[in-house]
Image (cartoon, rainbow, N blue to C red; front, side, top):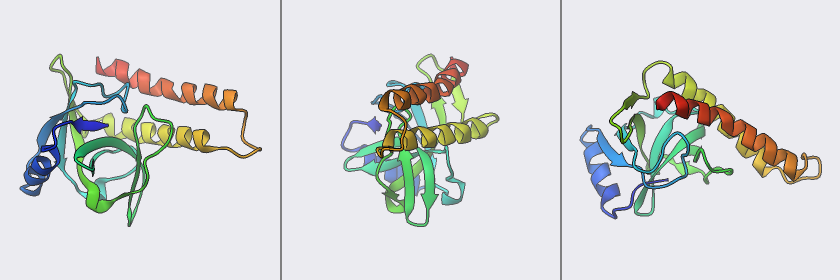
Amino acid sequence: MPAGRDAAAVPLALEALARGESLWVREASLSMLPLIRPGDELQLAPLDSRRVGRGVLIAYERGAQLVVHRVMASSGSGVVAKGDALASPDPLVPWEQVIARVVALRRPNGRLVDLGAFPWPLLNRLLGWIASMGSRLSMETDRTAPPRRLRCLVWKTLRLPFYLVRLVLR
């Protein structure tokens, strides 16, 4: 999900984060629906790789854009992340490209959501686990996998918690 379409967004974000500052960016894509919608603002904070686990929202650079997706897994070489609205995960993102974590959301109506405050760490972990299960289901292609229609129905059912969390944010 591009968090900004301006070509200068990545260098400016890197500069601010390198100084230890946080910054706000505006969401520009649909890949994190329904939790994050275009027009929502995301507060990015400097990355502490010890605090990057399943479910955490991170910002990474892809070309000249910032992408914000949910971490599904992390290792010494990088993270596997995925947009909540996407069926498949992104390719492995090396740690050098992961530039920040999302610590807060601000809705167009002005409501501020601190993702570090209870219950968000638990909800994000739960959503990360659900996203991981959904992506495994969408990637199954062998003959022992359930039929495509059933996989599609299960994937849509796994999306319900994301919509329930969105209702909490209103």
